[in-house]
Image 1 (tube, rainbow, N blue to C red):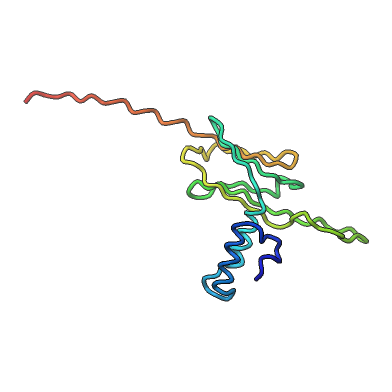
Image 2: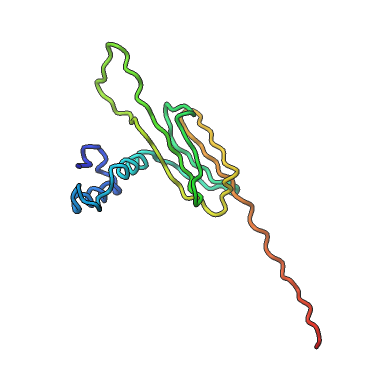
Length: 155
C-alpha cells in the first residue's frame, strides 16, 4: 500500500510506517495492520494543545462542525485519556456535486497518558464554537509524613 495515496506521506510517523511496510512487504506478518495504520492516521489528523495549570491539565482540540454526540471522552486503564469520534460526510442534495472536497471525514482519535496526580474522577469536557476543552483536575499533593518518635526503653 502506498501511503502517498492517502495524502499523509509528509509526517514522520507515516514515513516510518511506509519504510517498515516496504522493507517487510505488504503481505508480511510483521507489517502494520490496516487497523493500526487507520488508527495512526486518525491520531495524526487530530492535533491538540495541552496546558498545565497549578490545579489542572487542559486539553484543547479543534472539532469544527461536530455535535457533542459525535465526540467521546473516556479514561482507559493506566490513566489514558481517550478523545474519539467520527466526522460524517454531509448528505448530498439532489443536483449538487462536489467540485473539491478537502474537509476530513471519518474517525478521529487522540490518546494522552495522564500524570499520576491527575484526578480521573474530576474530568469535565465542553465543546463550544468547534473547540473541545477537556479539563482534568489535579489531586492535592500528599501531606508530608511527620517524623514518628519512638520511645527508647532502658533495659
